[in-house]
Each structure stands twice: as C-alpha cells, then as structure tokens.
Image (cartoon, protein in one colour):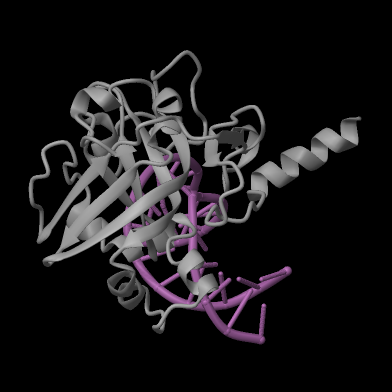
Length: 229
DNA sequence: AGTAAGATCCAC
DNA sequence: TGGATCTTACTT
C-alpha cells in the first residue's frame, strides 16, 4: 500500500492486469465523504482486436459503440455502465487508447467509511458481521456502496484523481500479489461464461467473494457438454 | 418502430 | 426461481 496506480500500471492486457488489482484499494471521495474498498474479486474483459483471442463476452466484442466508448479510451479511467437498467457496475480500463479492455470490480471489503456505504446501500446500522461482509459483495452493490453512478461517473480518472460530478477516485496498489484463484465469469452467456475463459479472479478463501452462479448460456453450454460425455 | 436479452439484486 | 426496470443493439 505504498503508492497510487498510474496510467502505465494499467497498460497491459486486462487478463494480465486483473490479478494485480486483488488486494488493492479503491478509494472514492463523494461529496466530501471518503470510502475505501479492499478489492477481492474481479473479472477481465477484452474488446474486438484486444489480445490473442476475441472475447465473446465483452461489451466491446463487436467494436466501438456509444455505450462502451470509455473502454476504448486510455487506461486508468473507470468504465461505469448500467446493468439490467438498475445497477451501476465499475470497470478499471486497461490497455492503450484505441484498444478496448477493462477489469470489472465484482466484490470487496469496505475498510473505511462503512457507515456511509451502508447509508448509500440502504442497509441499517450498526452493521452486523454478515451485513458488513455483504456491503460490497457483487458488482452492483460494490458501485452503490462506493457512491459511483453510471450517469455521473462513467470515465472518471483514477490515474489523475481529477474530480467529476462531485467525486474523485484513486487506486492504491498492493505490495504483493495475493493468493489468487481463477474460474469462469459470472452471468455470461455461451462459451464466454465457461472454463474456455477463466477470467474471473478472486482472493482464495475470502468471505466477501460473491457466491458463484452459472450464467444462463453458460449453464446451457455446461449441460450440453455433460450430455456429450 | 419493435423486440429480445442483459457483466444484477432482492424477495418469495 | 422469477420479477423489477430500462438501455442497447439488432431486426423489420
């Protein structure tokens, strides 16, 4: 925990950068309130033309669109998108400008500002052990707990720490690589959600890691695979 | 213009 | 297990 992430730290392929974000801290200051999150679970997403193989599960799989524009920009910004019309989710953009890629922050432990996070989540305080564990367990909960919203903060820069709509965000890197496990991504249809893309990474044994759930297409693919054997 | 599906969460 | 809730992107 010695220094903030710079743009160059995030210049690699998302799948290579992702494990290094485990154990790092995302720090937000929203309307003067600081919250710190120890990141425990992430997923890598590439774009069209990014990396040696195409990623069929990425928002940027088909190329540049208005929605995924931030993914194509320079590293160190946050791609914040709306999921299912309800939930904001946070990605750390990786790779050089002109190449799409990001690391989705799926879960973490709130290590500072838990009361403010609970208020944003609508969770009653004081927080019990389970409520504290669940505060940022899942990508939608995580963004809400940190006060980051799609409409306000898509594109916010964590490398410069520049303010955007009342918020700043930074990333404090971990000193050492965590004990990392890898597996299929959550909620992704088809092959992209199977072990063909083991691009979900988490800190082994950490209680804040979100419970695994097969994506619809992934479940179908797995069933078809079982059938074939 | 219409529609289907979605990187999710919560209550039943 | 299904409904909420709405945006995006693809089809007619």
